[in-house]
Image (cartoon, rainbow, N blue to C red; front, side):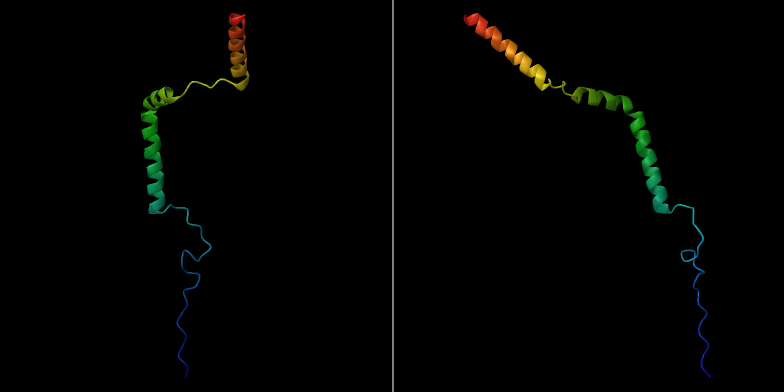
Length: 83
């Protein structure tokens, strides 16, 4: 007589079954916690961050049109002075 085959566990594992696992893994929970801590830190430092960004913002550059108008006006003034 041939020995009986071992019973299979196919379909009994949660990963193999059609059931959905809605809970997060430990790694996912740590990532969520890290994100929350980062957002809370930014919230509490918002005034300090605003001040730092306000200092670093350069003056807006003149548009090409305004720049050319200024240069033309200066040139015209120099030409008139020499006449």
